[in-house]
Image 1: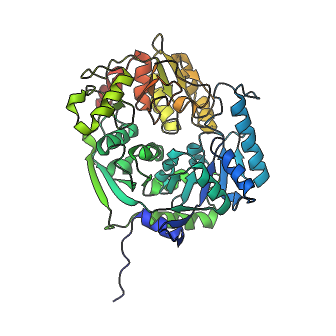
Image 2: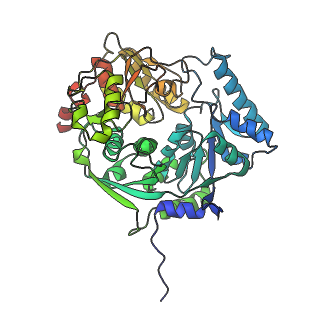
Length: 479
């Protein structure tokens, strides 16, 4: 009898297919299918390449855009920030010199690198993808194995199209059941990180499965995979299915004709085999998840909107120092409700939540409301494609009439390497992915992470609020 092949996870299949060889130190030399670059982490890498007298090995596999440092309030050049202007000009120069495709500000396709890849169909199932940005895990939504890398590794990929990596273990995270009204993908991933910890994923790739992820749109899956890195995981992914195929069909860089048919068959067979072994399995019920917000200085310091900010004495001894530090920075009262906390800024943007579906859902609730007096509200589409689609549908008018600033595509106030920054100790309700000290441009600035609809609720009430109550989400769902 012919022995049956061992069931494998998608991760194992992709890793094995891209292994060039095992190195003397035990690491794997891994071929990288697509390399995404931007203006911040690439100039130094190109400089090192020149110092070594090397060229770009596969320029057709490298794609560039400008996102981190590009201003979102104007596209008039030269930009006011001479550093930003220089870095963007350097990227243009390098792309032209090495024959790399650049989605520039006048392309109509520019945007956050993790949005451009999927929109253009560059991100495909079974790929290995690398980018000098930690949220490269986003691309795992398509069944790709995608890693954020450092500047020296950007150099390595440019020169060799390979990386030296240690293979992580695989943890399957099942979320089964049905999410309640007003509960979104952002709440799911914040709950996972809260449950497993910001270091819980160290050494792992996260495979997301179960009925909740099956039901999610591709854009929702991107939100979840985006924040895998915030839980310490090396990457995160969802097995490809018909939704994946439908999303990619007709995209500029997707296969066509017979090549498309062959690709679809290959992609669907990449999904983890039934009965494959995982290094760990975690099960979560969807009904247990409520709208979730952070109260501290890392994404794991999160609570449901109806819960109270923790007291130091209530947490394990090992966490007390970090909880005390977070409470001091956030200026929150231990034991008090997070709901009702005054905000100064509402930021709707970032590679976590600035896609078309986010804007459609947020506008559905925002329409007819006004931003609360004293609150600065900024809406920043993640890409020009999203911006133009919003403007075609009149969604930009909903935001403008409510009192939001309507911006150009970019990373904006997520990391504030551009003019969009918090001032002093302002508190920001943010749809982004990190609430670290100083993340949004002020060392005293405070960030509360939440879903886009929760950002809308905070913007119109001027305080951290339960969107289900503000917008009647529960009643609407019942009706």
